[in-house]
Image 1 (cartoon, rainbow, N blue to C red):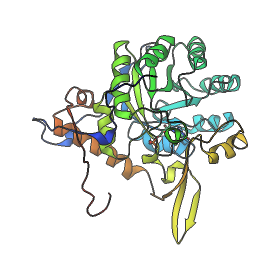
Image 2: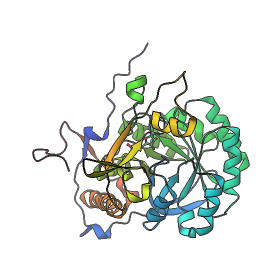
Image 3: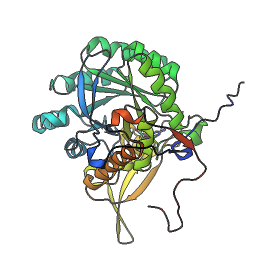
Image 4: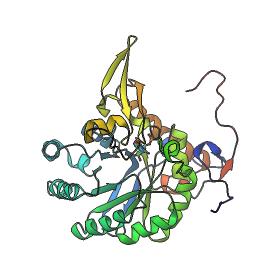
Length: 347
Ligand code: 5GP
């Protein structure tokens, strides 16, 4: 047994230190980033926020709504090939360039990914997503997908340490997804005791990825626009959001009436709800590692995404970053033991 003594940090443990700035207004801040990806050589430009590939977040409708802001959506993997065909036919090219096709690592998943990718040249992102990215099986699968799709952008995850980020990039991933345990409907830390505070995971994994010309997605744990800004400040190239985008019209979750109020169901992809729906229940050898919650219905996602992007723009003006690309260079975090003042309740 070993103990690492250095204290690892979550979003709640830091704040940005403000810095002198010549920016007059947050409208001067450019949130668009341009990337050329390591293996595929593909270019993408847009606002690097991604709706998570969860049942009641990463829907086709969400992709259409967020593409208006050049924001991405990782489409969840439970749509059929037929549903994909319909979507691809009707979607604008701008929407397709901003979607990721999510997949697991089975032979069926491989075939389905091939079928979907064959539908349009405009779709360039494949997101290979398993809960425990430390499995040797993921590395082999990334290699296989890289051979089959040499010019597509491959995302692989989830991991939280630099060694595994490097291994996945060397295996052919352009982008590595980072986060184990921080998610809003995740119970991995409770069920297994495994995890890594998300801000430290981002800082360490970004360092490892950037050294090799790779990119990372900070996935999970953002509860407010300030957390999204902290993830970018820590070095995340992209930030993925589940709970912050759940509960909206476009998310497509089940609506529930309770005491005269409307709620939308939201659940983890390893929760009992998800396994009942997609796998015929929780298998005897495993525990559910996600929970199910009811979120007060929030209407269209438009206001929320504007709030998130507005918050990040404002962070940039506080630290003097004229563009999102500069934010991490202008970031000094201070460690704190307080965040917002809750005397009148939470936002
Ligand atoms: P959030 O933005 O809601 O805090 O986190 C979203 C992320 O939580 C997802 O992108 C995914 O990585 C993770 N996640 C989703 N469902 C589950 C689950 O059932 N269990 C665990 N451990 N993580 C989940």
